[in-house]
Image (cartoon, rainbow, N blue to C red):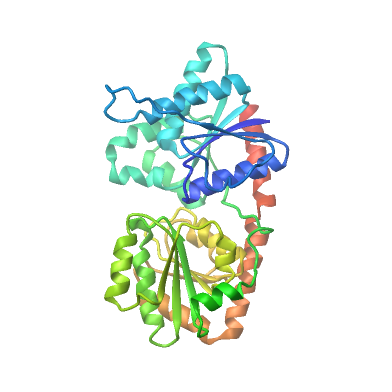
Length: 375
C-alpha cells in the first residue's frame, strides 16, 4: 500500500505518533510518503520505504502571509498524482484535512480518486474553544473525511458532542515501541544530575500553558521538604522563561535542570524515577506512555484520555488539575516505600506492553485503511 502522511514535524504528540506510525508501516512493507514543511523530528536517519516531500512556500510580495494551506494542498496533489498513492492520512483537522479535501476535489477533475483519513489529536478539537471562527472548517473537514480516528475514547466523544456531527469515529489509541522504550539504567547521567543520590522527577512537553509545566516545579518544592529531589525538564516552548523565573523565585535553580529539546528520551528516562504530567488538557498522554514503557510510574492530572492510560494506584496516580499538594504527597509516598515503587514500576511496563505496544495498534490502522479503501 502507498500511504501519504501529513503531520506537524515537531516534538508534539501528534507529530511523534504520525512519524512512528509511518516507520512501523514502512517496516511492514508499505510505501510511506511524508508531506510537510520540515522533516519530522523522529525521522532521524534513513528508513527503507520512507520518502519525504517538503512543502514549498511562495515568496510573492503580494502575499503578506505565507499560504501554507494552499501550498500543502498543491504538494499533496503532486505527490498523490506522481507517486500513485492509495491513501492520504492527515494528522490534525486544521489545516491538514482542509488541504487534503481541496487536493481530493482537484484530483477528481483529473479522474484520480484517493481516500483521506483524518486522525484527531486533541488541540484541533479544543481549538474551537479558543477560536470559534474555526468551527465551520473543523466540522466540515471531519464530515468530509472518508475516515476519522481519534487517539482516545474521551476525544472521540468530545468531538461528536462539540460538533454535533453524525460520523463514525474509530478509536485507535496511541502506541509505543517497547523494544525501544524499555527499562535501562543510565547511572552516569543519574550521577551527573543527582550526585548525592537525590530522587529524579521528569517532565517532557512543548512548554505550552495547557501543559502547566510550572506545576512540576511547585511539586518539586513540596517534595524537597521531605526528600532530596531534582526535576529534569525536557522540551522547549512559550512557558520556558516563566518556568526559569519560578525556579529562581523558589530558589530551586540548582534543582531544576532544563535540557531543552532532546532525542534521547530513553536515556533520560533511564536516569529518572517518576514522570509528572499535570496538564490542563491531554487527549491521551503519549509522553507518559513512553515513560511507563521504561518502567517509570506517572503522576498526572485527571483530564482527557489520561484515565484511559494511567491505572490509579497501580501504574501511578491521578489528581485533580492544579492539586499540587496531592501530587507531591503521591510522589513522596512512592519514594518512601521502595516495595510499592518497584511494584508500580513493573506494572507500568506491563501495561505499556500488554495494552499499547505497537504490534497491537498498527494492525488496527491497517485494518481501518482497508475498510476505508473498500468502502
